[in-house]
Length: 279
Image 1 (cartoon, rainbow, N blue to C red):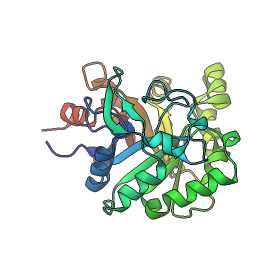
Image 2 (image 1 turned 135 degrees about the vertical axis):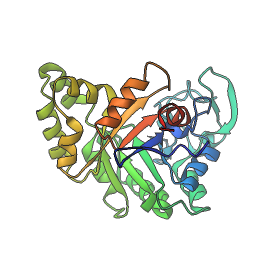
Image 3 (image 1 turned 90 degrees about the vertical axis):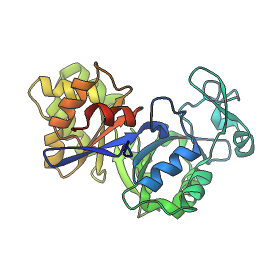
Image 4 (image 1 turned 120 degrees about the vertical axis):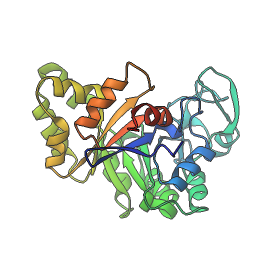
């Protein structure tokens, strides 16, 4: 099978983003080998970031260690050295040979083998502006410097995104409005048009807008094409997260492709490609 990079419909390319560094459903998350492979092949791939005790960043999703690693307690209270010696856990809790990576370790690994020109690594910051201070911002800037051109920063807090990106002119920006007050207003009103215009206004520097796939399809069912509205503002759309490739997700993916979504986040890029690729 060819590398699961993208699907094409009506001359529009939709990238398949490797969610948490997974190429296929059986992969474990956040492993260096898969992340390096993705960047070598020219894939779109994503990792999560949380702040540790020394104001750097761990490649983890949770703010606590217990579920994802052999450690326990809060990431923000754990030192870099301790984190590097913790092993990742599989989704079933089994201990993996892979250890927790820090952002500077990941960027150094990627810099050791020049990323493909098409490769794009999304750094999804799982915290907000309140978690940042000058040390955390400076450490972020230093860590990403070797590969900043191949990175895009995302998150639900525009102020945090802008603060982190301020000293990294080569870093690209995205925004996910599917949290907090903007999502609450949408749920209360069902006004997808206002939700979209508010998101675009809130993050004028974001080139990619990250939306839950169900939100995109709900808007479509009301007659509002949220992807077209975002395209009209010269932005791109990522629809997250298709967790599996099967009969339940096939029609959802097919409609997203018809709507010309620019990227689909999935835990099984290989499975989605095999299921949706036109012979």
